[in-house]
Amino acid sequence: MDETQKDWVKFLKDGNEKSFFNIYESSVHSLYSYGIAQGFSHDQCLDAIQDIFLKLYINKSKLHHINNLRFYLLRSFKNRLFDIIRKNRKSEPLTDKNLPFAVEVSVSELLEHKEEQSFLKRKVEKILSLLTDRQREAVYLRYMQDLDYEEIATMMDMQSESVRKLVFRALESVRKETRDNFLKFFILILHLF
Amino acid sequence: MNKKQSFSTVYDFFNDNSFIAWRLFKSEELKDHWQDFLIENPELENLLREACRQFDAIRLNDRNLSKESVDHLYEDIKSRIRVRTKNRRFRIHWLAAASCLFLMIVSGTYLLMSDKGKNSVKNEIIGKTMPSRSIQLISGDKIIALQSKSEIKLTKTGEISFDDNQKGAKAIETKRNEINKLIVPFGERSSITFSDGTRVWLNSGSELEFPCRFSGKSREISIKGEIYIEVAKSNSPFLVHTKSSTIRVLGTKFNVAAYPDESEESVVLVEGSVQISAQNEESLILSPNEMALISGGDITRQNVDINEYISWHQGIMTFNKTIMSEVLRKVGRYYNIEFELNNNAPISERRVSGKLYLSSNIDSLMTSLSILSSTDYKRDNDQLHIYKKQ
Image (cartoon, each protein chain N blue to C red):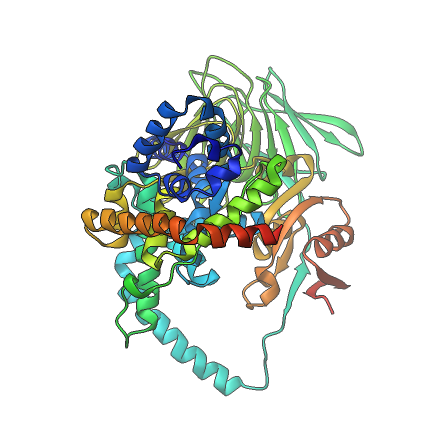
């Protein structure tokens, strides 16, 4: 059980506001990042975050069944964002299939390996740029949010088998890229140093 | 990549897309592949581990909101929660409320339009100092006017003693079973110590009813307004009655605010534990650093910074992002100033954080407040003006 889930169990038990704040504080940044990556504005993200935490607090007595709160929050956040923009654009139907998914790569800490790290950062950026928006979203949910295929499928409104295929194809295109472009890429990197 | 000599630094792993894909996709298939790789090349285990460790520092979309916006957003969520939990029972009447609102808007628009040009909304709050009255102690048929800030003591023999600045200490006798009353008007403060050692501080605009001697199984007092109380430990429980609740303790320190003109009562606990019962038998046990809000029959609790609620008894008001109108309500009560707070001046929405030392000089207090709230302050005889900084 992760910390967020522990705080959730505590919050359900005694309504302790400290636990509620911990849940909020530990998830607000990643929710925000996820919304921004999908092209939503700063204000839309903050509005949606407000709404889902209000709902979480008010409806806590009906939400005892949640066994992965981080996943639940991500999903309600995404649904809420879609509700918000659906309200604003009634004309064109909106699905998440045509939304962008931008990924910004950064490196935390480990300053002692600065050169290796910036090399690796560029490498990951390059690889992510080869993927489609949906593939990038799946990778983001897998790597950063630690969701499993089932959960990613629910998030992306797909069958879990399709997510598997999506990720597999992404893997394939990455591996193929190694053979074809390895030399070109390596020379490019050498020039950068 | 089956040749081991191609892996001599972490770069060799970073250049291998199977490695990147394995780490990035957390792929089970590739996990097997790299386990096999290690069986073939056991000497590369440390290098591979180092490459993985460095990879783990990679973050995707790790955007952080500033501490300020995180806190600000949380405040917004909290205030929306407060509104929702408070007004739950009124929601059924939303239709009635909505039609009232509609009528108000229509008539308001009409009034505004007919008044156009004459009265524009000013960004200014005006306060008026009110004539002060004295603290009164009522015991049976005796009514005694007390000096400002006088301290009152009850002796074991049932006498009430108090300071009288002109004549020194003075005492009156009381009859058994008689209920005594201490009335502290707006602009005054007082404190009283009972024979068991329990001490009560009364904030402005408060009334306390107490027996001259605690007898029987429990010690009981009733209050209106706001008190801070330090209850002396004893086996007999101490009960504080307010209009809509009863607080039961053995020995502890806490603050009670139960002003008749406010819809909500609050209890803030400093140490020990207290049991609060609302009229409808709903009850709750409060822990230190918690506040209970009693509204109608409902009791809710939340964690608070106790200093904001109890520091008044030491002559300090503490604010933490408190809305200006609330600050002025407290200041007005303490100094007996009537502020006009319903004129919708935008400055009454400002947030104030910091401490105000409650000096007896209104001007120095108002000057401190104008610094804390970035406003300007001007005094014109009994009229105080708070307005937007020019």
